[in-house]
View 1 (cartoon, rainbow, N blue to C red):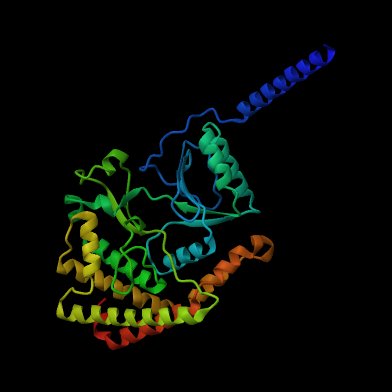
View 2 (cartoon, helix red, strand yellow; view 1 turned 30 degrees about the vertical axis):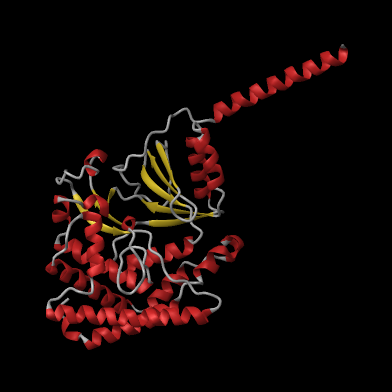
Length: 373
């Protein structure tokens, strides 16, 4: 009887401890119910030191290699990407900015940064009211680096339909599309627009038209054409990385370079003859997404944007590209398991250099066209 009473007391005491722990956990939980993420949210702008006060919403997407978080707070909305190639993506971002491609602000937070630790704690606290989300985030956020990206309130290609397309595809934005294509050719990014130089069906998610001071319901209403459209943004570019066994890759890249050479010369020839055959796959892709058929004059503007961009790349030069890469290297003490620098060192500088030579030859051969850009 005494033993049973002792066991009963232990069970009662255990139950009391569990209840106390549960109460303490509830005290440490956020009491603010998370809202649906508002795609028209104001962007977070101060990337000097990121502080997310009073997080209002967290949207977890499984896109990207490890997932993407869309976070809205008192300070504005921001994107946290959990990438296995953060150094490469940071390099592509800095390169795009240097080459005057409209893209997002981006910042890499390291495992040893107080800034990263505080952001992780703020996110987990805000998510603690939702057990499922909290559990998923605890696993997701166990990474060495956070890729913090400027949030762009805007529309992807699919929402350019109808009368909107006529407004959106003006001369400035068409030229911008051409610049983005020129940049993609240089970094071997087939994950945006289909072209004859690569096997790709295109990815409509990787270009965004920024919309300013609008409501979410107005943004997603196809019939609403009275929006404050801004400029086109390039997001989520990819590039070719060096492989350990380079023999097969060299053959593939040499074949790509020959295709690029032909494609760029075709563009120059078509500008002279006022034709538009080499962008047929791109034209079809835009039509599939928007039901808008680009005309010959619009395609000519895009082609001039492509040529303008390759000229810009040649002027920028391989030395400055190498400098961007070198400036992103981390000290060994900050590079977790050598993962950051090893990834960065896989960037194929020699491939970039070969393409710059091809671009320069195209410019010299067709100097009369490039003088008019």
